[in-house]
Image (cartoon, rainbow, N blue to C red; front, side, top):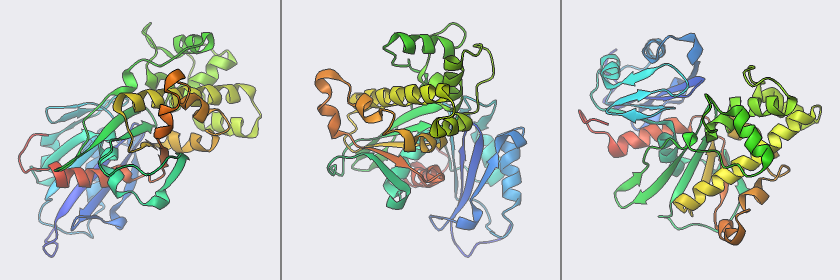
Length: 332
């Protein structure tokens, strides 16, 4: 790889539970021709996946990367990220070896989504619940539904954005009714209580279908795409039941998070499952369940909810996080 006319080049990656999205940034902007989505199951490690990706980028030349940022679906500590739903580790040393830079940033995927909010194209957003305009410094919240579940709060500070890490998907599912408690027991693992992610994820929707259909607890979950399609056409009442309870528990969870963080700047839903269920939110009680907070029902009308349709937003967030918090040789 040779020089690149003095332009800086950054390597960006967003590792989900199923797919990894990658891109290069040239001169502080994503290179559209470099954006790829690769299936994780086709590689034994992130190192193998990244090596394969970089080998396809021979048309972009540079002496070394100015920085690299990787977002992943799992906790990050002391410069090492561990995937929650995949047996992969992402380490600074590996990234430095492959990219030649010590300016490495490893962050949770929802942190990256949070940093991306300031750079969203309005055409890539869909309003779900609306309210009046928020102040510039209002706190925002990003909620991700895909292979897993997580949420991250976005603070606007004088020196830029601050998005702390979170593992919200492993807190308790907010059940109330007898049916919800029985469903929670069905989706829970190893005798523990049901976590939010056990239901509010792709596999969670498939397991909710199994609960209503009377499938054995240890049976493989139904395909969530099939459940959504069956609910859409009305061919399977269990699919309708599963989608309805999924949406109502989603609304209750998002409302809880809104109250915890006072996200007056808006709540943003991201991820493949979020995009798939959004067309059904209105008909299956999302708004009613979101506002079902007793004497705080009116207070919740001050929070907007918006879907983000940009599947590569986290890559933009990685670039923004690198610009704001990257520092050659610093631990992330």
